Image 1 (cartoon, each protein chain N blue to C red):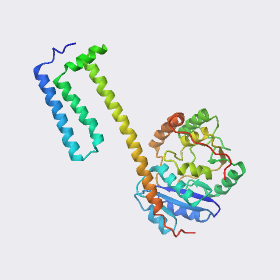
Image 2: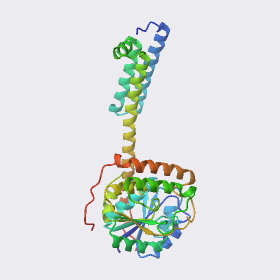
Image 3: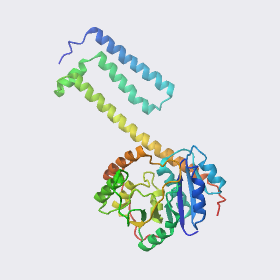
Image 4: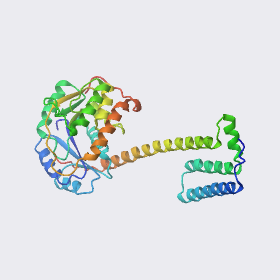
Length: 235
Length: 119
């Protein structure tokens, strides 16, 4: 155990979960599959593969699944948590460089960014990302080049914060909210792959709704959520 | 501001309607075994409806006193505001219930994690 837990939220990922588990097996890190009340064989396949599975009794969405992972990490005393998607989008070769970057820069949250080195192509698909990026910049003063990237690494202090709250989500609005509370957020260049199979948490139509919700949420969330205290000296 | 325009037939209809509503609420509340605190709002609400259908002058009195030209406007104002507050408190309760349910679900899942961990 090297202190890192990979949290893999999985909702109806029976087509890609086996491959994801194989990929994670090849890595020296602990991982846990959070089965988010899947209606298909996601949990069975993961268990057949002898992976550690946390089985949520009903679907809670990405936020609930991720929080379950954070609560588990806290209970087991992990020092780092990384969200790793079950659909094959996240690539394992970036885990180690992200961990190294986090230790070097001592940030609380490190986001794997697809657009740190390459600029973001301007298209309908990235319009939402650009919108969210602008909102984050407006409210926090810091530019996040890839705010919607799900590949994020959290330190011990963030594990504690997430495990104790019910209203935090692994989404850009929460990240912006945390930044406004003094949490240090950094970025690290990565690439991603197109998903292996199935449909994402964000299908095409809901993507638009998601972006609008996020934009409003980022602008207003600091007024509705209670502030947190950021303790100095992590670990 | 006196409601001379209110016909006898209309007043009978109002009374029948408000009593019907009250008895409908009562029957449903009893059947569904709603928590008493939640039922109070609807019992008082239907009682107000009955009072207003028997004495519509009450409405004219208050609207005239407040300088609202039409008693109907005053009625809408009060009822919409009441329902708005009630709806808001319901939103809060649903949100809290959802949080609690999700928390319970996660606790259940975490308590059932196999102890003989792989690796």
